[in-house]
Length: 123
Image 1 (cartoon, rainbow, N blue to C red):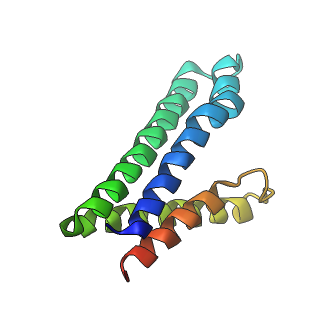
Image 2 (cartoon, rainbow, N blue to C red; image 1 turned 120 degrees about the vertical axis):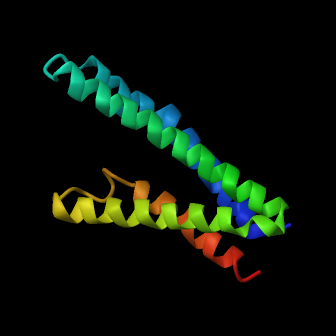
Image 3 (spheres, one colour; image 1 turned 90 degrees about the horizontal axis):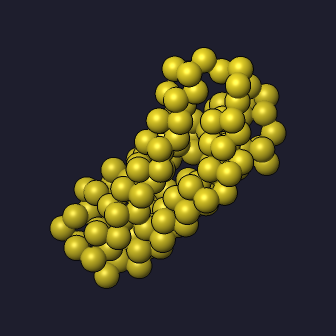
């Protein structure tokens, strides 16, 4: 078993939990409660919220499967690329829009996932 892919899978599962449990309360809930957003914009954003939930859960599944099946390394590769892409886009958005790093901390979670995934390729 690849313990680093397992770790990346557990980090992904934890990130999905944080996203759905706490982010849902802090981000999705207020989004849905907003009265000044056009319904198309509101529900498109809500749809995207759930797309992110699905992708993070699928990343966990990719890593966990690759941890157990050495021949499935491509799945871990995909999940690792996604993790780094999400981290770098989050960081770029923070800098571009002059946000505070602690207001948008997702980058740290995705970097942890990505680095655990990378290490898994060398084990």
